Length: 167
Image (cartoon, helix red, strand yellow):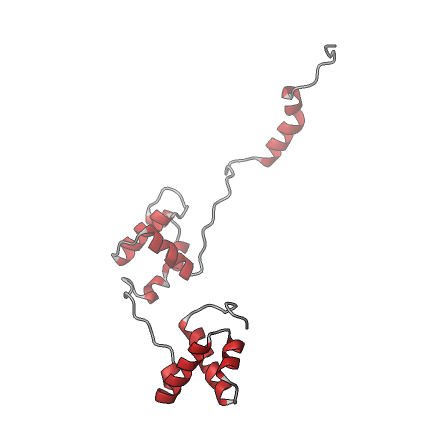
């Protein structure tokens, strides 16, 4: 794995890389060789080794990052796709089209928490949902009548070149 060719830089991946580096060190490779193989700096490998010498492999484990707790528990947020499946009409909207502002209104009604449009968008992405644009087609469109009109009426209205061209 070359430098910067890393997978996602989440805590689990970084922990796995540190533990792999420690295993490579224990197998007899030099710090420089471990750094080259893992695509990190020799200083990083030195820090891993120092931490492992002082605290064992537990010192290389990922530390959970706290951050701000969510306003609504993730379990409740996981129910969002189910809420959306019921349709926008069931929540009193005039059409069955879901928009981010509409989803924000439903979330506020269901959970009592006001989310920004950006937060709703992130929540949708976490649930594996994506933005979709509905196909624009009239519901009452009669395809047979359209085909007949194109074959019979359209030629009458279509411009035709004049038989006599000016010279």
